[in-house]
Image (cartoon, rainbow, N blue to C red; front, side, top):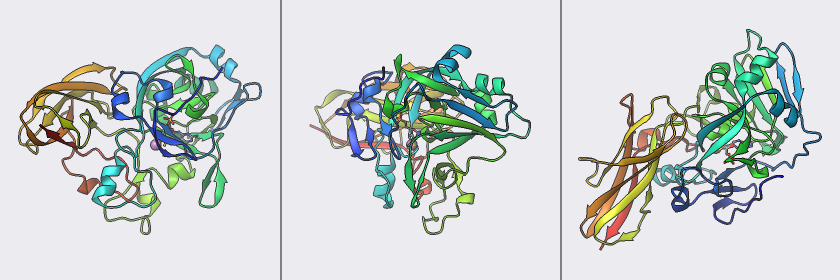
Length: 362
Ligand SMILES: Nc1nc2c(c(=O)[nH]1)N[C@H]1C(S)=C(S)[C@@H](COP(=O)(O)O)O[C@H]1N2
Ligand SMILES: [Mo]
């Protein structure tokens, strides 16, 4: 049975196709995000799949093509569980739009993010079973959904390098937090690429194709790339864009929220931090003086290397107006950029500048 779905708790950015984020207080309530509270990013239709006829094909530059039903996939390959955070590359786009307007994009807050225990089979095991030819360098995924793009009906698709496919815990997932995937989250099977932005985790997976070059699908070739701030939609040469892969190091304040009024005295400040860049998060710190001095916070839960950290601290605040600023550091000594200006890109991706929340204390 497919899990029931009800998006009444979510912040709906668009009804058709459905796009919805998880309110920050709900997001921060638990380390694992319940499936019915998990954000939804869909570009087209939601396929309703019949397991009797469903087959996954693994094809292209392989030694032996495979066409396999879900039950066979489950019985022929060992199950593997990965705790990983999924985050959309458009997270925090609203702040970029406030700096310099974006055209025709969903203006997400820091809310298209969630963490789950994904269960499935390792992509690596399936690739080993079919035998990858030596000239194959990319693993392309094609979905069953239908998307309207540039006047054509296409299937959503994306790709990752063979190296990432073999080295990481990349999964073909059929369960999320011990429930079958719901229709909205990709039933019966989706890709889950830990550490990469959400777009590479293709839902309603129909075909895996081993090939020499990255996927030519619209969503790989002409979307989900970043450009310098000087480039616009009219001047972009998509071959020059930087393909979004690793989740950038980021930290967000979830409590309090923008424009909230708080009582003077000890105030609990909470949030999440995330990275997909290899080195774990080492510390998360807060400033209330524009970044001159920083207060440490405590990381209260984590599941390295693929999931977020939840952090919190208590600040003793006297009456007044404050701007809370958060930033994270990873174990390699990387931290986040202070300003959004150099990050601005016309599609509004990968905003990981210091997150700021203005509050009023009385
Ligand atoms: N087939 C298909 N897969 C997809 C998408 C889509 O629209 N169609 N959206 C992608 C994007 S951009 C993100 S962020 C994640 C969102 O996954 P979720 O809706 O399960 O949270 O799925 C990815 N996989
Ligand atoms: Mo996304």
